[in-house]
Length: 247
Image (cartoon, rainbow, N blue to C red):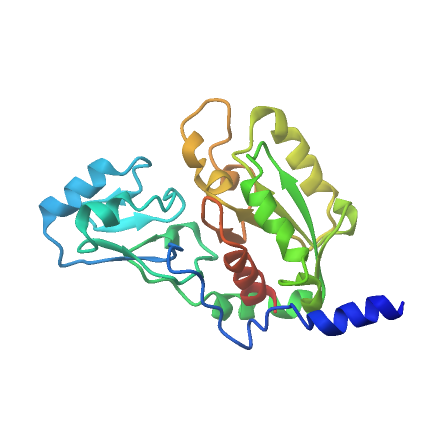
């Protein structure tokens, strides 16, 4: 016991002070993209044609965060004159349509204050369902339980049974084989309940979009309350979304 206490004293506190203190991610991190509306039309068209996920709309000069894989091709091609990625990891929205953006997103906390903050108070239990995911989004959700992020200190926990859950967190493109299991999990949760889509796959189909083997987005099956885009979303993106939406 003394050795354990000595070890903890030597290591100190490893938990992030976020949200009291802002977190600065490494320079190579690509966060919220900013679209220059004054960029030449021909440059916008060139970037749109090069986008592997058809996330860019050259006419409206917007980018769909639910399709974007943050590969950076558009930024490199335009040398930052049309699309430039910031280090802002606050990407979540309450409405799918807001993910189609030129770089501005509505205040998530203001929306949730009217709908969810009073409802769930200081405790939120979530059941995660991997609906044929590649395990990238799942891995970045798992690290929220590590000492650095320590999601439980905010009263948010992942539980084993949907009957103990207030909400369901869905990752993956929702294959035909996982559709029934996902719907059964949702039905097993007591009301009121929330649905959270994490990653581009459950929101838009991601890189599997258009395949007959997957659902046409989670919204086609369940009412989605929170959209967290990314491929995968950074753990800080997930943490910010959960805290802004529920705390």
